[in-house]
Length: 227
Image (cartoon, rainbow, N blue to C red; front, side, top):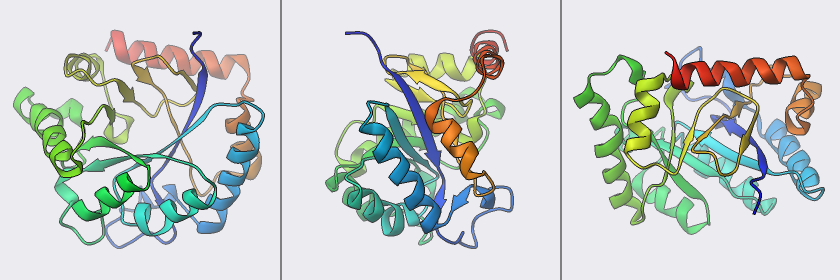
């Protein structure tokens, strides 16, 4: 079967950012109304055959209390990439919260342990963020962890090689553009509150010009294979 092209949307939080959210991360939080608008567009486009995948990073509590119920209203699923180091922080998902998302039919993936730039880590620290955190997360949800979302979208050839050797089925970046459904490395587009409705529609419909698409593709190739 021929692989499908996917538009992978990434969210970070829905509603009002909590006090633990840094100033540079706050713009990635969408209001409930904007989130519903995006999901309405996703539902309409899926009816036309467009393949749109939904993911969430950071494991904020709003994933469970706000996003998941709205996703359920739209009969949509998403994959939530969580940080094991935040599981005991009340502003973030708890182990029980993760299991609730799992029971709702949502998927759980790894975002690491402490939300750090993996490029700056020693081999042992990288193993803690990936191999060990993955095992911990699998024990919590009582299911294997197949996929990983790279924190900050920050990676290079060493990181990709490590994640491939760890056997992750899908490695999600933040490079933007469309991804092949059979690719091991898959770019995502993170939505921001300051994006216009027109820009979000362009993202959903892959309406970018050829130059933009090629630039994104080449940037990903360079980071994966040359840097």
